[in-house]
Image (tube, rainbow over all chains, first blue to last red; front, top):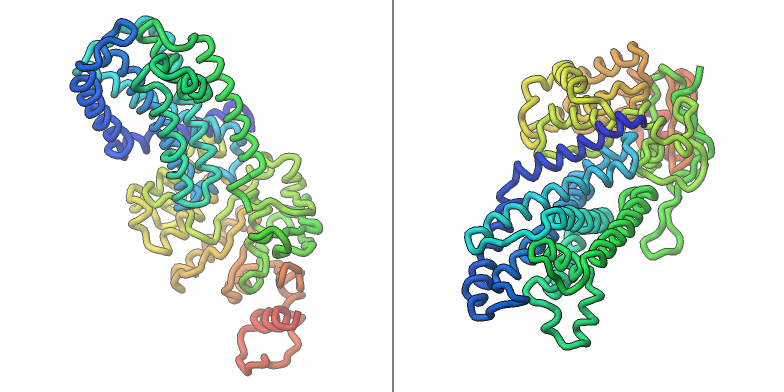
Length: 258
Length: 257
């Protein structure tokens, strides 16, 4: 398939994904806004005022990047996992793409880009909501943007693996509930790992979400629990590994072809 | 002139759920579909028709054998081969929340056809297949026959040279079925090769030039319609029921092998 045709195919998958995001916005955009309002109100304003300063900044400013990233991660993941799984399991319209000459890497690019778009849109919306509670400063705007996109990319790739391999509705709810949520909550959204005992600090260092949240936080506050370069390298490596797994699954037709 | 489809010694074994054993759905099938032909592939339920189509269209991984579409090997040049094929599957498999016009334009997109070219093409196909007025309704609101026609339109949107129809008239009323026959005949006149599977044997008898009968994963008859009809022994069916000539051959071959 020539490059111009591949681009048309990529654009078609991406466009379809974006149309879906806006067509069902009460399901795709609204829930994260609602929960973030509650998080900002309860953890930021009500409890945060009693916690005081972390790293010299008020708690609500410390928690804003983490809460934005919480929404970005869950939305990017859910978008791709759900879209791909329903098209494979419910209507079986994934066959429309599988019988076409669209190569595996374009299928990955199309679905994942749609997840990235949703992650970035939700991230920006949650950030806007945070302005009603606090005015976060942005120390390094490029780092903020880079981590917003990279985090969406990593979790959209993760969501695609889940969507490809899930064999039933349980399959796409187990990972977000029992893997993703604990990783996110224990990744430093609400606290600095410096407040943990040394052993738990080492355990936290094994959590990839810890690097995502800290890289993003560095972009806002100019400081984090770990170096921004390390955060970037972890994210980049993770993206490459997940991309490789997705490519292998699609190339072999695992979870898709009989 | 290259054959539209050349299948050599095609085997497919489905793995068993537990690991050992499994089912051999295709047991060394060899078949050729001449270019420009209307070819009927017949067989009882579970004979291997849909598996064979799945292998050709890339939806099923084969265990062994060679498949070529217009001399293009589906293993070495899968993208090139898929460009030649349009497929209308047995199950309704479009997103019911999408509009017919969007389903067609998106399908064209997967073949690299830009929207500005796909849109008028989709409008024409929907009109030709009697779905023009339904173009902006969601798939949920279409009747069974309309859904079938939409799937045929979707299979044709990229103007394939080889159209594969897996029971396209299943559950369609007689009048609509006949109008679909007429439409398919116009396609073969335009040079499109058609491979049809159907349980309506009078449909195959009416439309096909060549016919193959598959049973338990093996081809048990293959030739021109006249050659296959000539296999009819003339003896009445065991159950005393007498159908059309092709039906008699079909019953004879699939119940004795």
